[in-house]
Each structure stands twice: as structure tokens, then as C-alpha cells.
Length: 544
Image (cartoon, rainbow, N blue to C red; front, side, top):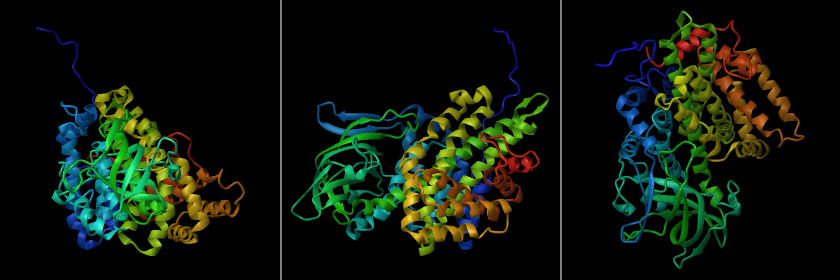
């Protein structure tokens, strides 16, 4: 009989068996703020149910298994026939099915759909972010398809369905469908106008035959894809179905799956088109204009996804420090650790508050809100996604060596954290997009000023930041080289305005002091010690 050398003590229990929605006060209060009162009870119950799933041991196990068992590519069957299929662990299908059933692809057809979906996306990202890619692409494809009523009639009811139908067959035979996207190519990357994939018109005037490649094709197991190719009239948007109307497979050759830093449960691929059938969406030569709404929607999902990763990292850090003792007391009560946790919580709440405000603008749909999105989405995508990586790294450090061990789940968050900053246009692309909006669309900046102006007079540091922003915009010399700095300030001022209006005073005060007033350092944990840091940490605590 083996002897016992020690008893395990002073270890935090797993963060499990909790409601990830109701205990996230920043998220739940944003939903309450932006939803119509008559929808609130229904949506709160729906999101609480999903929050309990996120906090369950079962869903957490699904996420871990999907990450540990990445997809595999089968190019041929046993007889040598080309099949181009991707095999996933059963946990992946369970996650994806749950995400579809939770309405993560149904925002366009539900009342308050974008706010309720945004909150669900923040929650579901925390379980395993990889399965959110096909959910995002499917959601985002709808506005592009609506430019062609005939195509929308076929695809939209299936893309917005809350049924996960994983079988590959013609769209008309499916209860639900998923969409992917293929824009970038080896030679151009973000510069999609240099794409070389050729689209040869077929006699019916709407169909094309594609020849070329895509360097990054998202979610290759999907039922259809929006792609860009060069038609006679210029760069054009097209739909490529995986299965043709007669039940035969379209030519969609998956050459390999990407071996990525994180996001490993999701299949990202390189594909070749060789006589591939496609149907035009929109007019020839207007491919970027047609697909731009899809791009904008996926950019917002990058913000939501990063907000979800931040929230999970902060929840794990605060949970650990609440239970862990060191140097004579709980870590959470130590002044320096409390400063770190409060700073992390501030960043997380600012990200969530901004993301849900942008989702509400989609639900509103008015001219003013659309103008605000034109500048606020790329600014938020730039800033929030960039803050995700330092936050997850710092949160991992709060767990000490435990946070560096795979079993903690923190390394998975760290590996995932840079993704949203890179996908759907990296930082420079977002900053230049903001610059274009400022230069070409006066209504966008006017809408932005009206939004941040709603908090004018409530905090002197916010007022000074708005004034400084206007001064910086008055000088256009070297504006492109300053685009990142300008975009950062636009995002911070907008976050500050929202927190001043909606967050508890201690949260707004700390944000304005450290992010707008200059009373904070470059690293987390450098907030002014005179602030009410304990209340900020308590607000972000993941369990009651």
C-alpha cells in the first residue's frame, strides 16, 4: 500500500456549474439596455440557458475534446475517387449543433436578433472559439445573398435555420445549411483586387466556370461559399455550392488544411477550382461592393469573439485568485493583485459594452446607426482584438504556473487571442478603412461625434479626450502614418463615452483615469490605487 506524502490543499476548484450569462454583469446589463422591454424576459431566459450550458462540465469537455482532436482531410476514398471531405471529432458537431440551435445564425430573422445573437456569440466563444467561425460566416453571408432575391430565396431560410444539418446534399433538400468564404489568394492577401481566379461566363448569363485557387478558405465542410473571381467585367462575387442541383459534387479540391497557432478545432483550408460551377451574386465588377456587408458582419464577430475570450480569461483569473491563498490571505484581497484583476476587468467590460452597442446599431438599421457602424466597426475591430492578447497573457499569469499548463485551459485562450486581429483584415487594413471613412463619408464621423457627445460634460477626462481627437483630426499632414494612433483614440473615446453613460461610477472613473486621463501604465495592474478597485473586481466575479 502506497504511503501518502501530502494532502492537496490551497488549489482553486474548477470554474464549472455556473451561469456564464447572469454572472457576467457587463453582458447581461448591455442586453437589458439594448433590447425592447417586451423581448427581455424571453431573451434573458434564452441566454441564461445558454450561459448554464457554457458553465457546464459537459460543454467544457466538448470544447477541450474538439481542440485536442483537430479535423483531418480526406482527399480520396478507398477506391481513389476524389471526395475532398473534412472529418471532425463528434464534440465539434455537438458544439456546432448547439450553436445553430442557439440562434447564432438566425439574427437576421428574429426580433432583436443582433443583440441576442451577439450576447450568445460572446458566451459560446468561451467554450471553444473554433466552432464560431462557420457560425460567423453563415450569419454574415445573408446580407450579400440578399442582393439577389432568387439566391436569397433558396439559401436564406436554410442559413437562418436553427437546425444543424451536416449532410452534404443539394440545398433544396436541407433543413439547415452553413456557408464559408474564400477571398484571399497567395499573391495578394488582403489586396483582393489582385485576385487571379478566373470566372468564365456560361451561356445562361448567370453561371460561371471557375479556375484558380484560394489561399484561405474558411469552413471548407460548408454547403456553400461566397468567393471573389475575375469575370470579364471585373472582380465579381459568386456562390459556389458544394453539391450541385443534380446531387453531384461540385469541383472543390481541398489541397490541405492549415496548421495554425490556435483555432485548431476549425478547418481552415487551401482550395483549388478547376471547372467549378458558380452562380453570380450582384453585378459583374462589383464583387467588393457585394461582399462588403459580409466582411463588416464578420469584423463585428471578431470584436465579439475577442470580448468572449477576454471575459473567460478574466473569469478564470478572478476565480483562481478568490480561492488561492498566499502570504497570509486570499490573492484577490492583496492590493497589487486586486489592481491587476480590476484592470483586466475594465478592459473586458469596455470590450463587451462596445461590442453590444454595435450589435444594437445593426438591429436599429437606421441611417444614423449605419453611418456609425461605418467608422465604429473597423475602429473596434482594430482596438478590441489587439487588446485581447496582452489581456489573456496577463490573466494566465494570475494563475502562476498553473496558468501555463494545458489542463487549466488558459494556454488555449492565449493561442486563440491573436486570431481576431489577423482575420478579416489585420490592423493596418482596419486603420486605413477608418481613414477612408473619415475622408470620404462625413456622415460617419458626424454619427460618431453625436454618439460620444452624449456623455459630454459627465467626465472632464472624456471631454479632454474628445477635444484632443478633434485637434488631431484638424491636422491632415502625415495622416496615413498616424492612422493606427487615430484609430486607437477613436475606439478608446467611444468606449469611455459608453462606460460613462452606462457602467457603474467606479468602472467609468477607472477607465477614464487610466485610458483617457493618462493615469495608468503600459502594463495591466497600474491603475491609481485611490480608485474603488474592490468593487470593480466584485462586479466581474464569475460566481456569486
